[in-house]
Image (tube, rainbow, N blue to C red; front, side, top):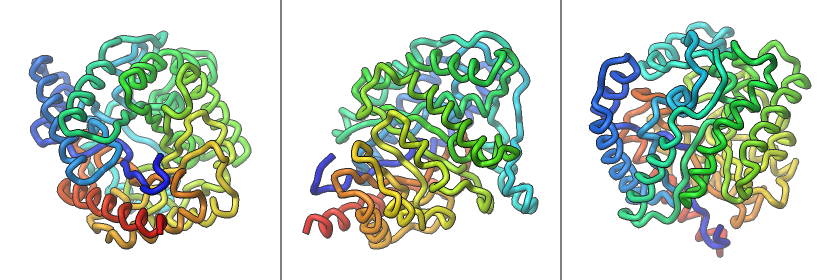
Length: 380
């Protein structure tokens, strides 16, 4: 981190080209697709998406998750054991309270196409080369575009456990640690390539109102503490500074009034090994929580990356608003431990269209401009 410049990044998924969406939907539907042609198209898409990130001014870029059907369900193609019945819908407490919102969520074609088959056999590595292919494409694209730095996202053991039902292992803990050990080589491959590993962890926040609404707060805290134990086990061979984690309450157009407050979980989140923590800080439900962390404090060994733009609205945040938000966060930690991010991904499932794809790129440009403004002001 630089003391005189706040770096900007995002959360992972970026809009995919329309033709790639159609190809990946075909794969998901079981329609035969030429594997070499798909790989070539993914590589082209990665090259273009990295170039656009650099042009927008993003400091730490990724492959936009071009090769993945979604940020979590991709593991069914990379790990063995996931061959049971797929869960097509999930129970969100906030949507139960406002059922008129359900159609807004379920009508999105990207969400309808996702597949998360249950675990019905031992978990192991099915495609040991998949992560390496991803990193080769990202490294080549980043070099061509002269990117400052790169990251690559991967599903955490906890989020895999809530999307893929366990019908094989005798306990949730056994299931979690089996996932952790099987996904560990992917994590290590990402870091060995020179990229930062990002672990996506909606289980630590969204899990409260999606998967564990019947638990009281203390029981939920115990649940996520075990999830973090599994996460730490999976990254035990990776330096903390090479890992970041994304805390998420769910990237869907719901009311989110059931979101667990940051203050109720952040002490447990800090026990995770990753040095950098990304979390929502721009949307109307969580934009106030800079004041929460200003009061509670941040451990000296942690870097924070709050979202200062959000991915669910076609409104393009003004650069001055981005800078204003960063000034607030600079009251929590100094600029040397502050990065600027996006609340969540722009297209977390293939074909998901929450906003106009071109607006997403305009938002990233505004993010970079706002970082430059805040960096100058804080340096002065």
